[in-house]
Length: 175
Image (cartoon, rainbow, N blue to C red; front, top):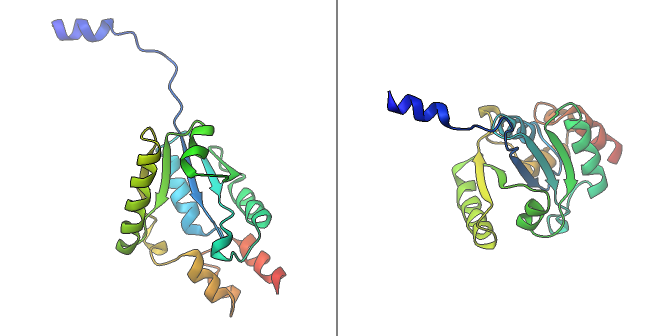
């Protein structure tokens, strides 16, 4: 009986603290696997910023402006998502946007070692920001933007099960 009285006296605030996360990546191109991770994360966080990295060292297929356009078109109807250009360190970007979580996709076991090292470095750089690893649905386990680009060079229609329609159209325009 004492326990019940104590619980009833706790003053709960009606306002819930909004959890913001960032989902960084090159997204070159954005895939249905990326969108699957985004939607899974949307069940956990109130606001997700897709942070599109310039990452010129990866020799992107699409320039940053095109990747941003494709990203924004694909998240236009997702109320909790937005897209921004990732400038600087990921943890600094997160802090600037009030995010406390970094979302990363984990497809296969071989991804784990890299993601683990990255998470530990980010933790070292800013201990207030956590990394959450999410796995995509099984139909996207083996896909990556790199593999998508390699197949698209020969036949963009064959990647239609793995990318949104606007990506197919953007690849066709490049030819």
